[in-house]
Length: 295
Image 1: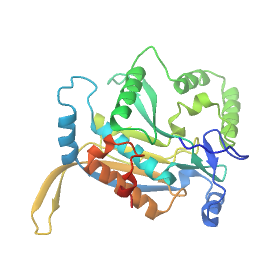
Image 2: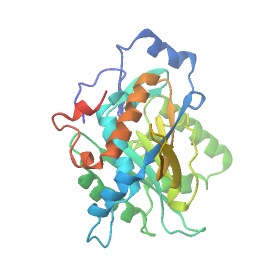
Image 3: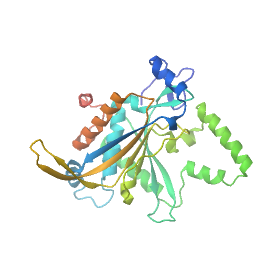
Image 4: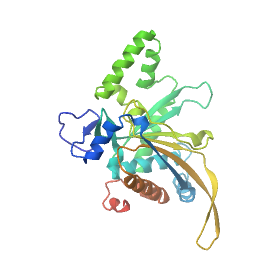
């Protein structure tokens, strides 16, 4: 995590970026709502290098095996370390640099219609490797799947919905006021995926096609990634030879105000490069020479 001196206007979860170009600073005043400024990117990941890597990585493992989700989320987390503009957010007409990189996702306690869901968070930094990330991620997932444990955000929602409607409206009005001014309690920020750097929905794990998910005006999340189910595709070489192979689609929704299209393009290229060479995920982002893989 980057160390900076806290100044007036900074938030507990982000530093106010005061020296940005005028257009970048003016855009949030012109387009104040995150949900009205969504950009969509579709990406297909060739599974051949991932399948080969996972076969080696999982050899001899009987539990907590590495999966596509682990590789994809680690690649995106690493890209956010190397491409820091991706970790910005806009709140109350100001652009902030988030103080940490967090990956959030929903965990189904059991694969049953009536089963509850838990909200999971994991952090990524300049020292993170695929192995350290996987170990921490599995610990969080096992914790979420305990039926006797609820994350603080889910527990709070269960309590709020029991309030009389006039009181609930007052509470929500207060929460949105606190949200605009960066005063939401840390206990909520730490477990609400709408305050994460990257919110991921693995629809492919339940057999659904890829799509796009909306952003919300609540919280600070600027990037939502949907992972779809794998499928066969056909590409053709320069000689016209057919090349059938499996891919996994990603549907990415971004707040278009935090960076420009060229920066997004470079980030997508980096994610693809990391997933074409997943062994790179075993190195921490701060490894000398790692910046050479960014454009």
